[in-house]
Picture (cartoon, one colour):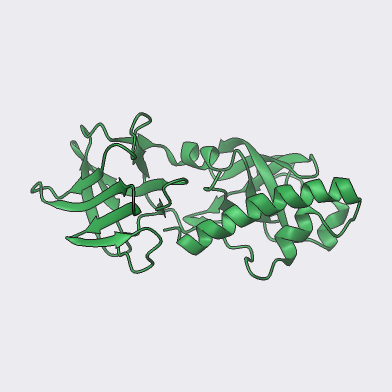
Length: 241
């Protein structure tokens, strides 16, 4: 699950990267670069995403409007477990097993793989761990699973590769010292002079192929990096975009 602090971090990184890039061109100062921002910001150091061990993701349908309709998760006995709704005076509010939590409340026990309860940058994705004939079984936190009916038109299935491709199209960060850029998956390593000073790099997704992702780096190099190894995710995504 992505915490509120991590959400703020990604937004800061995104805005900071844009600002510093503009400043670099305007002031011609080498110390104000994207690589500096990614590598030297001690308040928000590079962290990878949570592991992905599920079959796929279950996300909101394309036409679902969370400003107008509540998101409701029910048990197989039709008992309401989770309700997420936008309230004008409160923003996004989560009711979990009868207890209500306002947006940004870290005590909220509802913690799916991706959950940003900001009304302007709302994000929700469940990791699906099993699929039966009629239901998807998904994680709502580290300990609890619920079932979502496949006929529920509020949700849809998204393959993991498509999910990763969507959320890396505007950027992902990776540690080039341990996850080098390569000409092909498992191929020859592409080296850059700035690697000796910077470990963390940024890239824009071009293509996802199994555990590999083809990226264009901020130095306009094109190559492949691993986005995960087994269930361990190796990159940081930009969910605030």
